[in-house]
Length: 264
Image (cartoon, rainbow, N blue to C red; front, top):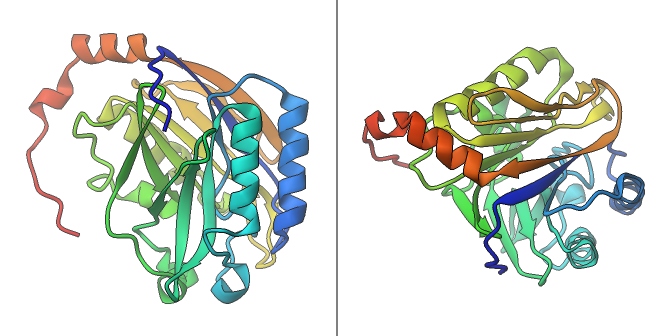
């Protein structure tokens, strides 16, 4: 774990056209994209199931926690001195998970298992649901990890004044791009936090089209970065914690939030 506290946090959004069930080919593509972008990064965000696409063939898609894609994430994190995150299909103790991995430059790994499984695709029949939300601390920033369909459930992501930035990694089809964009803004506004949403483009093996619409929004819901629709792209933006804290002090709506206990 890296405990260096810094005001600035540079986030790189990676919006790819994922090759179906092709982890090695996809990782090679990400290296090319990141090398071409070449900007300094603190956090590199890849989409949901970045190695395979949103596959419900869990047995074919899943890797273990020592699998090739996690090894690759560790290599990239160390080489680029940045945290690398994104979700993979993972098998552990005989169960399958849509697991968001958070890999730091020192090789440490934290993870969050997707809580809300997308039943309209049968995901709840192929993967196990996660049991709790996860907030990681990196370079003085508290960061909430979330996956795709989690975006639709605001109680689960409610900021208890315990995070500064929420990351949503997704394979969110183009037919629902308006809810994607609207809900990302809503999560930023209601939680007084920065929000990053990273999605893919292209057409997958199920003939679902993806428009991308990867975005970064500030604590007022204003767009800081809005990726080119329908195209593969890398983009980076630097966040300032002093701006976030100043706004929270000026507009402390969180102090009037309803108290509740989330039962999972």
